[in-house]
Length: 181
Image (cartoon, rainbow, N blue to C red; front, side, top):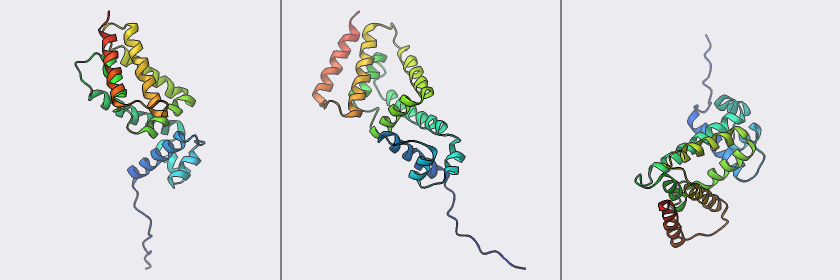
């Protein structure tokens, strides 16, 4: 009777592989490189089959990545002062820089929503849900939300260098705007 010698295959670590796939997709997206299953697999050091095993398609991988960032968004929003008006809580995430500490990842999400219309629709749905929390949806609340989105995007792209003092002033102005009828 012959016995087979044990193979020296590395142990399977699905959570680690998923993290590497997320990281690779994020890096490719945020640096403007082509994003395909092959490119993601190559960057992660795995086979295309591994990507398909974990996510099925590139779109499903991007949807899972989107879910991860929306969870982070919701967690950051939950840390804001619950007594503030919803639009101001939303704005304070940008003012306090708590919602995008992972700038590479959020840049990747912006890029992904530009070319994946399903993700763009999900992002829009999330924004509408958030906006519906404004007790009396007004143009002022919308202006605060749009300003927050602009600040967030500016921070992600390093468009304007906005210091803490300016952020405090913006917070005050947004609060004033929401107190007006």
